[in-house]
Amino acid sequence: MLGCADPLSSLWRASSCRRSQAPVAPLTFILHAFVTPRMCPLMSRCLIISCLLLAMIGCDSQPVHVRALPAPPTEQPPVNLPASLHQRNWVGPRGEGSCVHASIVNHSRGLNLYEFGERWRATYSDGEYDSRLRSRLDAAGIDYAFTLKADPRFLDWCSMTNRGAILWWKPSHCCAFEGWVDRDGQQYAAILDNNSPGRFELTPREQFIRLWAGYGGFALSFTSDPAGALPYQSYEVIQ
Amino acid sequence: MTESVKIQLSWGLLALAAIHAVILGFVMFAAHPPSHEPLREQWMPPQSLNYGTSVQSRVDRLETPASVNLNAQHEIKRAGGCPTCPQARYPSIPQSNQPLYINGERVVHIGPTVPIRPVAPAPPVNDVIPAAGSMTMPAVTSVADQPTKKKYQVLLFLDRSEKSIQMAQWFTDDAQLLQLRAASDFQVYSADNALYRARFAAIVPANQFPVILFQDATGGHIHAAGRNMIPDTAAELWADIAAGELLYRQAKSGDVQMSGAIKSKGYSWDDQISPTMSLSSADCPDGQCPSADTSWRPLDRLRPNRDGGLFDNLPAKAFVWANGSELATVGLMALAACLLFYILMKRGQ
Image (cartoon, rainbow over all chains, first blue to last red; front, side):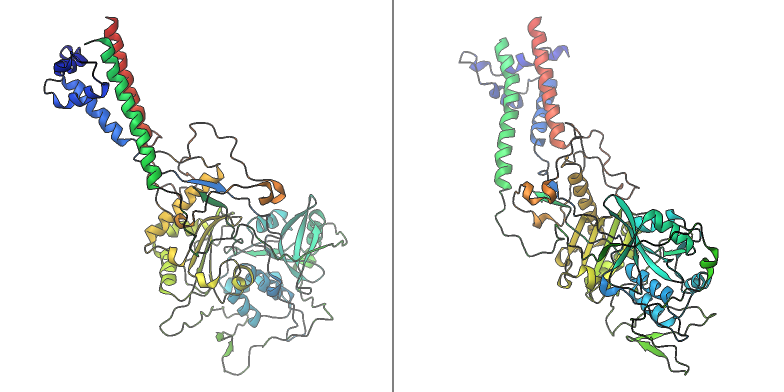
């Protein structure tokens, strides 16, 4: 370090031929630092590093700026099955209504299992009860979740995950639950009744839970992935 | 050596840095001129949606029972009570040995003890149609588990093209895309899919197939690519998706810039860059336009996502969270400061 005690002086000595002239521009010293062999190694290293650092400045790519776009209102009900895909109830060979099977078809269509729903519709009809329904779904290799206790958390899960469910609703009847709907600060159950396709019927949550228990409290939902929300552009790139 | 000359040397170094920065600014401005080219005709999701809701406004009021009715729970549900409904009778299983065909599909007779064997549609010769619901992709959910709400959705819109078949195969064979699929709600649509025709046809036209949509649970797009924007390899597709996810998070955090030892890759929206726009209150619903994240503070950076490790494999192991330019500038300033300090110390002696 003693040898480099005055590195700037060594630079000055290297350009001593110009000492009598007007003070040399500061930049000249930098140039001389590279050409004089007597320059202190430490100073030369510092200047080399400085030049390398200078060369690195600005090498990064241009930053990208993006802007979030406003999101549309949440779709309601969560399983907004188009009216053209609503399956109407039908009478089976034994003269019984096929509401359970119609609800299964509606539930399948809401989960983009249209072909499965068609096969089910062509295979089963007339009345149905919960245990035989589950055994038939087991035979078909369908994964499902269900409740027998009118557990509102089950319907909360069905709504939150955009799956919906089928459930016992109204006397001796089965309908499709399409999720919770928020309206005017209150929560309603949206029901697709296969006897009245083309619309969703709303019932306040508390009343719905009590009624559902009275009708048996059974609900069932497939665990396959939901159909997917309608896409919208959520951000854009700006210059 | 006079002190003034020594000090001039240090000031000269700083002046050189400033001149270099100014020159770089001019060079970058010249190299990245504002684009005046019209946007190419490429598909992108709409910015607003019109839901065809049929939610009835009338609220039903029915009687209130006390508790779970176990008798009603196990009874046969066979309500057909719709006197005005047509007495539709769907074709029953024939008694003869002739197989039943519906819409070109053979229906297997189902009895109380015969298990259902789902019949996949027979593909045309030399053609594979990835029809929705009939793709033999491995299941990723357990029977016993009740799946939680997933943060992401992956929608594939496929046709009979080779690119469609290839893309569908990526989500079966590629480890990263398979992991993405497991972490997302995954659906496949074709042009003849009933749900596609009823819900998505107006948004994702069939002439843009194949299309991949990677979106959040509300439908907000994260990465969208159609037809020519679909890359040639699964790795490139994954990189595009990861880049889109980065921009998505950047937008949601108020355009907080990503910085650090990360190389940003080009993404499918490169050609979709729109001219500089500004949102007025008339452009936004209820006159409320999105505003920047007020929680952002200077020097805040957008860190790599640690969300379940899905995008955690990005090369983001920076020792110092600053980019190359910032490090070089800081280094240069430190060096100049050291030199200046040294000169002043010598001057004091």
